[in-house]
Length: 414
Image 1 (cartoon, helix red, strand yellow):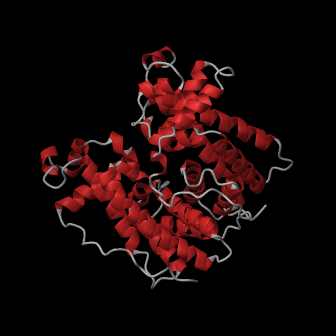
Image 2 (tube, rainbow, N blue to C red):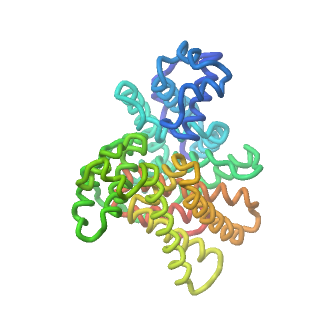
């Protein structure tokens, strides 16, 4: 296979030794698992067995911990992106690294949305360069892809390996990496629909969700004012805003303004902001449940391959029809850890089980834990495609997403 392009990334100093390295890793893992807004300096200190003031000997503030963690993640991914490796060898190395440190890909993809301008600049520059090298490697491997398709595939590869943040059951790191490598190979070989002209998109990858789409949310809400109640308007606006800017960055006043009411008026419909998020997530998973039943009910046969294709159709359809499901999968799973998110979590868990059951029937050599690795990878790549500003407006996204998900779970074109 083709090798990656020459390593032109700037050489960085070796990572700091000792306590600072330990704190950086602990912070990175906590940010990836709980979300940056939900992690305090005191929590990082407690996990490291030090006092909070001891943290400030190494970092001026929490922003600096996240900024250095994201740069460290990029550096580690740069280290395995070398011209000496074939593309397949690179995939093996990258999956091994991300299974050992799943926080790396998660922070690189989404951490920068929480950083201020002084950190975003250098991170964007390094991210563009890294993504560009992956894109070049993919185009050498798949010369029939146009630049935008290859760039999308590079993003999909990053999303697929970032699913390693979840390790199902008692699966060894080696087996997890091997399973994930096989998924990446299948996904990278996916035959995409023919390319179509599309508006130019930004090359930046981690910060898609940072853009303020409140004007779009207001427009949607206003246009539908006569057709929906105020509660539904609030849910629609909240879904768009949470996806665009993150849950923590959106205030109740902003939610109200998006539908033409004051912030305090929001409380006539919901007791608090968390209840708004919970309602958005429930709306998303209920729509998915209805669509799954519709798709399965239309099947003429009941073979596992047909059921998996029905699940792919249902998931892509709901994921791209509104932002609710991607909010449930990406934001609700972190922000609604308590009782408020229990119903949505229960449904998503049952949804994954349904996928896994069909996959186990399709491939009897898989264990339940191995099947879940494949399913998590398929769902993660789809969720990220729907979440990313540079990908969600692609003209053939539903067909591309369906093909990529089908390939991830081992289904051929169809």
